[in-house]
Length: 336
Image (cartoon, rainbow, N blue to C red; front, top):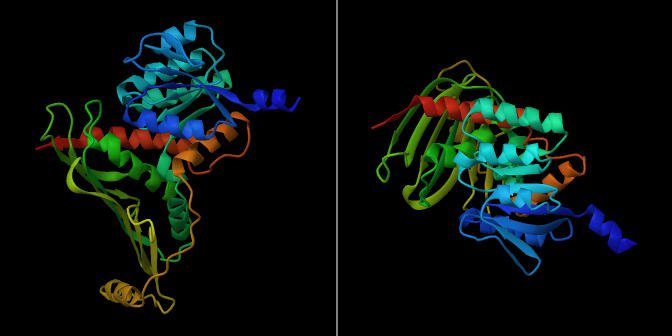
């Protein structure tokens, strides 16, 4: 009876796309074998085959036509394939977890979310950083107004590769930053400037610098595949303090600079004076429970499949705005 109940609660899952990131997803899926039963993998490098109770297919359509019982699909192919694969899955009553960037047009995002609602299916996007406990704490600290009114947010996301051909560094890297920005303040940008360069490809930009205003907050970012050092940094400057997040510093990912002695003044240079005093007074490192964000993504997906409470940051409206903003930035992108 217990074994039968466990088998009912487990979800039959297929992984569509088995490249660099797909193999990482497989690792996490297998680590969650109490809730997921990985029954098949789809990738163009495989021929249709059945090995050790696992089904391998060359394309998703063949797997669907095979009539195997599939509860959900994890889609981790090049972003240019996300739309038609997700649509195919939803049309065949399969719940979906889709790797970012979700799709490349806001009209496609709206269409797929509408289809999922119509079919009463779960459609979730893997915005991994919204499941990082240090980012969740960062959002909490900003919304508590401990550092006051936000003036400036800077994102830095660089590395030496991996290069992509399907999308630019904007869609690959800046997409993470846009999701975090929207978790802080779900407002569309204005006064957009985007400059990039394509040193390694004729098709896509490998370095992108973006600036815009979100309400009265000045936002800047750099995304690059051509950098000697891997960086994952967010700097937030408020009237009363600052926050530094460094995703590569696992001991002190999050630093909060705030000063209780802060006094508001109308003098122009008082912001600088107050921030200097704040920095000199030192910083606090809030306690953040350690967990693997990608593992939390799959646990949240299972909760959504089970119609339970889910992560309140990574919701439909945020994802729709994320794609809309990336689309706007992409249209403004000037290659030098």
